Image 1 (cartoon, rainbow, N blue to C red):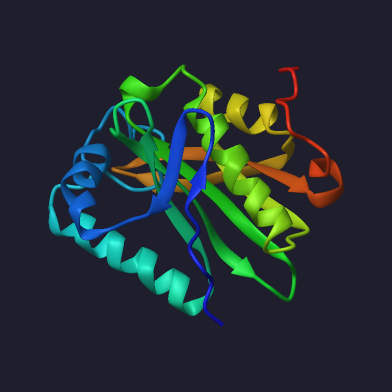
Image 2: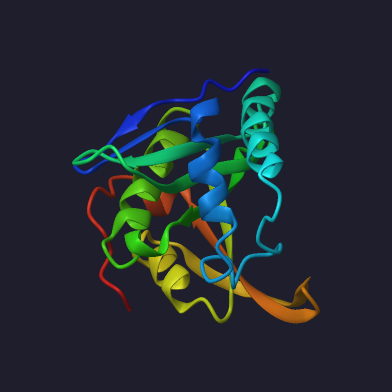
Length: 190
């Protein structure tokens, strides 16, 4: 079953399907070692990785397993990152949330705003019951984004990633439909 990849708008952002013209911007994002220091894979060193990522986004949509959207800032049209759902399971009505943003976009609420728009689509259009996310335990900023969206930390995956020889743990977060319903404003940080 094909999953339509939406174009979503917020006050400051446009979330849209990736196209081939995004390859350079995507490579710049995913080749930045500082941005990816908590990622579960090393930074990209081959530009062809961005083309494969874009092809994988299309394949996810065709197979109905997910939707990854490029995130552009409306004020200047700049590509600032991406936000996506993967591992969509229509039987379980569940998916996993992921996102990655340029360092210059950090601290402006863009990740929260983009994820909120995508979650609204996920719960309203896809009729999901649960969305899961993971964050490296050292990535306090990403954990804060998830908690602002209403995600609940459910546990820790111990030593679940080894990237460039460095072992790390991940927090697992979950957000249920009943916790999301009616939410339009951010939840205050705890």
